[in-house]
Length: 252
Picture 1 (cartoon, rainbow, N blue to C red):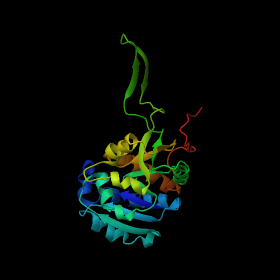
Picture 2: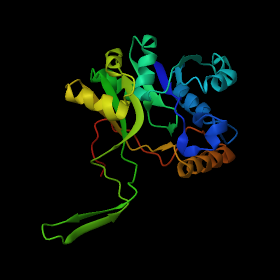
Picture 3: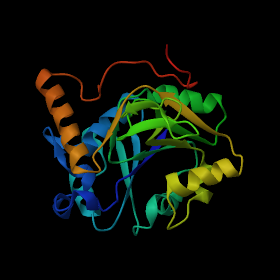
Picture 4: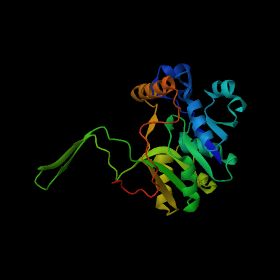
């Protein structure tokens, strides 16, 4: 299966680092962040990769990865103006005439992508969204009655009934026609698919995911990967171990 990696964003929240290097090429524990993503994809048999880039960053990726041979993958490039995630996918539409994966280039995870692919086929889905129950929200949450009395309160809870998107999708080629310039996959395309009653499914897992979209999260990922490298652990193993649960049922 082919994968489209969205790697052309400006990374403005990581400025000034991203003035010198694209976000997903930031070195972490001795190699670019994108290398870890490629290792994860290879583990699940995904070796045909299309990098969706802007013309500002293309040469950096091309000079480092070339055709992907040194990492034992087949790498190609789609270079287009920055017109949103859906716009980037639309610009590369000729690359995808079979089921394919969309993966955001600033996210690292280790959930069972192979099982997600099986789930997508089994459901005959047009779109499958990877969702996790391992993300606590950043605020305390309260429940009140009609008088305003506080009935319960939790600080930074994990809301299992509302699993969080991991920015990993599986699409059928038909989905690309909904991807237009100046549109966002998460904000625009997925809601449109649901509204049109296409078969959209969520593959739910308890596995964590990490992004490097801010300095706080970048430092967190650096600490995790550096620690695992010093212990000689696999870079793909993140957080505590737990099995994927594609049906989304609560654990006891």
